[in-house]
Image (cartoon, rainbow, N blue to C red; front, top):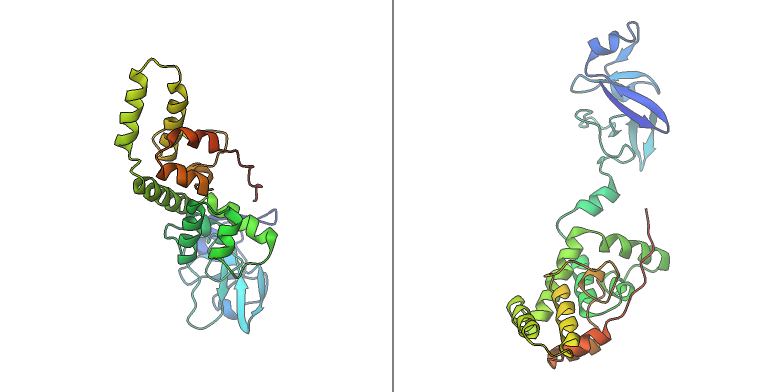
Length: 252
């Protein structure tokens, strides 16, 4: 048997009629689940037994809801298989879970990542990529959700890498510069070493800092001033231009 908690109440899906009979030997079971009454026990198309928890119509489509999922009552529909993630829509997909775990970015998500890496604020980047979105609260929530997904993090990483490669800041370059500085004894090179460290963080060669900064892990991209410093080869000044960014509000 399979168990599911719905609104603090346990509901059971039995593997077959015999399993249900061990608990409810005289319980009536409806084989025609499309026409079975509310709260009746029905036989699914693959031989399981479950109870109808809800019946109704949505957009002129009659449906029933069981512990397995939400089912269209059309002649071609079937009730079968495992418990669905979501019993409140026909496809059974948990939209929030799907949004988080989806691997392939949409065209709009790609644009969002590109704008963020370019240096636009995350809210402005979202507005540009999703122009139909108007609610400030909605934009803030969606932005926060996007920044937590693996696909968006990877997209922004790639865009940052392109910017670094454009000004020839490669891992080899960073390692060579770091070695040169370490080999020197001049104390003033500490500033340069800090700058190199920041560049290494941006390129993903070092662990991310816990404190959020205007670097790749924060998804706030390079500012125009930082890009000019990179293009001019002035790595020392980049450290001075890094600023802290406030945390995005947490959402469920």
